[in-house]
Length: 87
Image 1 (cartoon, one colour):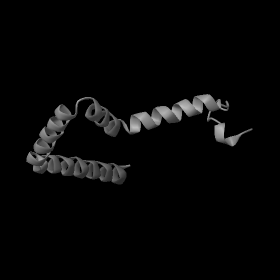
Image 2: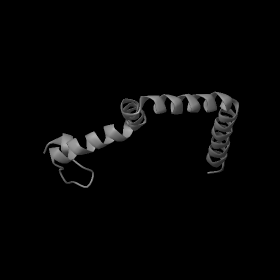
Image 3: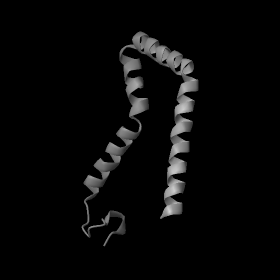
Image 4: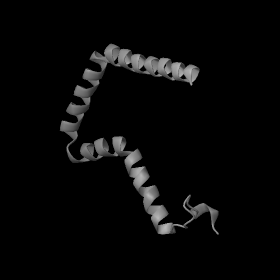
């Protein structure tokens, strides 16, 4: 048995299915970079304006974004710690 293609349910998947799964993972993983790059090649001026608007919004709301992230992380840690102590 080829352990590289062994699955948890005991079946062996084909190399073609594995290759498609890897390709799909790569496309999904890099979609945040691929999509803007594709738009940059198709409509460079509009893409640059949209990216600049997003950067302006991001810098204008940086404090709120960081506060929300800190609140979420802190809440998660308090709840997780409390559940570990109780359970």
